[in-house]
Length: 344
Image 1 (spheres, one colour):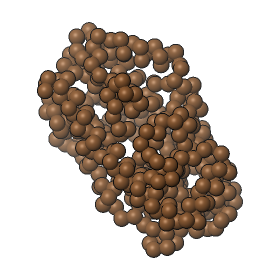
Image 2: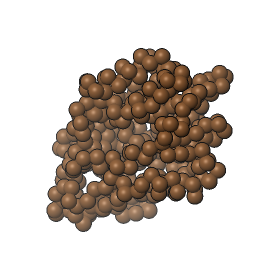
Image 3: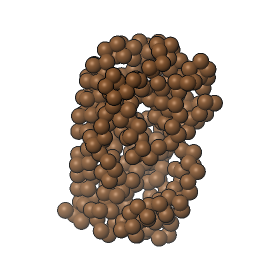
Image 4: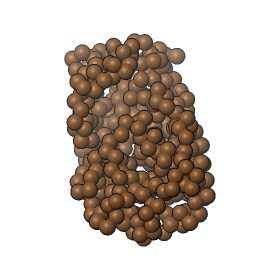
């Protein structure tokens, strides 16, 4: 939303069209109509140029832009029929899977289209390189939210897991690994508390024996998530590729981890596909395996050296801020689309 609102602000003739199809994928009970009404109430000026997706209405357009492979695949024929141009962002997910024929076919179709002008990606120097996400400037900045520290502002050390639940048990995001780690770490004392954000509940894993230390927050909007992160000491993300579906994988780090890092939370995450291009392990991030014993050993070390944990969080806030800041992300995006539409 932050990215597309940026386009609406920059280009007075731009329109945004959405099918709302992702709502079902993340288990949301909200409908597209409800989301559109909420958006109109919060952003009445911009919402005049936001529409429900209708392929007969949006073409011809001088430039069409989409995030994710599936989305550009949906409109590519209409773009070509009207001799328009398109740009798309190739993020993990959204139909982009590794070594999957259906995904390869869609990608080949898009990359060989005469209407293609640019592919934006986080993973190739042969295309336009972009940082992995845009974060809302219309929300309270993470830097404006005061961080709560153990021993000064609170009597607990708080460890969180944040992810959408795309499959039973959240195995692709590593929820099963997280709860096993929480079970072992919980024996160190009640001062350790564990927090889960997403559509998870007590039924998704065995938490017998430490249920009183587990807290389920459901799905949170950005504002509420940042408030929660202000009280978190570290986030654990033991996600893994190829579990949700053949060839499916996450970007590095996940959006939840990026948001946590912006709030000064120490990020403990996996990098199974060795995607890391930005961070230094042990300085501004902690790269973990998916082995429960190894994860717990690394966490226990930092619990015993809390000042080092704080230092990683401080460094994360700086590095993640440089990586995901509004200007660093939106400037190249806006320039690219301005060239495509205005020739400037």
